[in-house]
Amino acid sequence: MTGSPRLSLASIVIDCRDAHALAGFYGRLLGWEVRSSEADWVHLRSPDGALGLSFQSEPGYEPPHWPEVRGAQQKMLHLDIRVDDLDSAARLAVSLGATEAGDREHDDVRVLLDPAGHPFCLFLTAVADQQV
Image 1 (cartoon, rainbow, N blue to C red):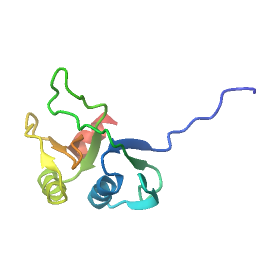
Image 2: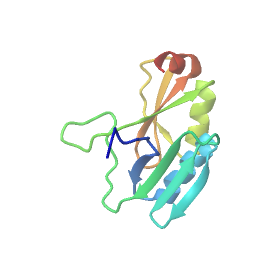
Image 3: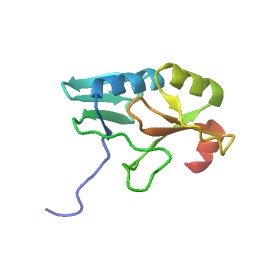
Image 4: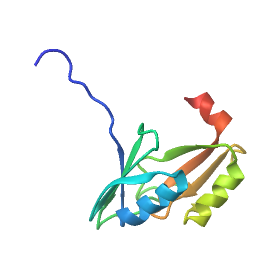
């Protein structure tokens, strides 16, 4: 083989107890559709096709603790979701099954937990644009 292999990130996979339930939550939250589905696997894709999010059912899944607790299951990653209206986006997420994590240290960020217990952050558009 000559040269370097071409690599590209195809999807982020999130483990959970019920892939279909969690994919349903994120599909409704983000407005994304299911692109493929199996018994223990669901793949969503953004409408422009640029991003993928997959969900895998794991029988031994343990939700992470938020905030972190030493010696307990830790979060391995979290999603940052850009929004233009923080309060409305948080209300929508809660209406779809998320819970507020109670972290209100910043006026421009809201931390929530998805139905499987994974933390995710809602950021105001202007703040998220500064991070990119």
